[in-house]
Image (cartoon, rainbow, N blue to C red; front, side, top):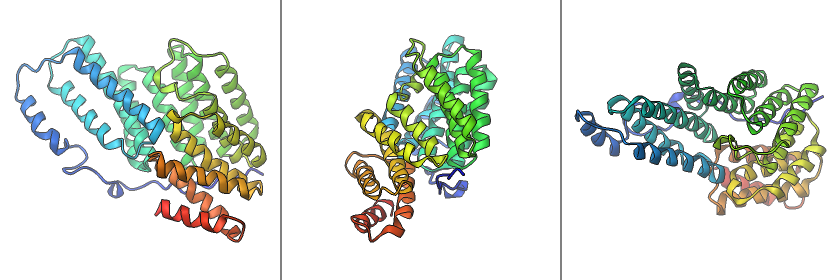
Length: 346
């Protein structure tokens, strides 16, 4: 029987989510005066270099997320998104630049959903994902649809909604076909589907989706690969397969894959390495390898303490490790590790 990995990520109510002063839809205080001044101007012409700077900012935030996590990114991203909406609503621009602005708003919105998800704000994340998907549907942006549905599939797995994850991943694959997406995209969407199958314990369909993911990934990169697929290096795909194996109860195989992934991952993807280490520690517990579980958990703690890792998901994974190791508190190194974990997650 499959053993589903515990997932204590509970969807929060909107009231539990800390927001900037003035409400979720109001501009932050430092932006309020600026937007008021701009709104009163009758000739605010939007320049292409302004849009390009914002596009670069969006890319920079996505890169920071890969290294450090989304806890510190969702607030500034929301401020950037508000500014883009003010540009759309109040600025003067031609149709091509308007299309760029709407695409940029969609990019910020789905990134904001992802950062909120990584920060543990699941209700807000789903709201932003829905907004991004609605915008993509209205503008016929199949690229944004593919990306957003991929994000939604990943979140659904963490919320223990495996069947929902499968539906999102398959719908994303449909949209990917509409723009003849390159193989990095189809590889990502296949492994997202695999994670949904693993979460519901469907080993047959999970195996099939994993094989498709590797087959597509091994075809290599393409000039058309969107920036949101660059994280899917070999280390990450190995890690995602390992997570599938762990959910299916294949703990020994999961441990081997996750250990391999942890060794392959680079500094630019420290957040994913931290997530992998947490899963590795969990897999090692299931395999009865307490020493390796302790070692992996200590490495994950090190990333949080010294590398600036800021990801609620990584912390939640350490809570799972803590609960798994608690019955073994007399084993070598476990008692001290449990205290370290409690200090980190407090």
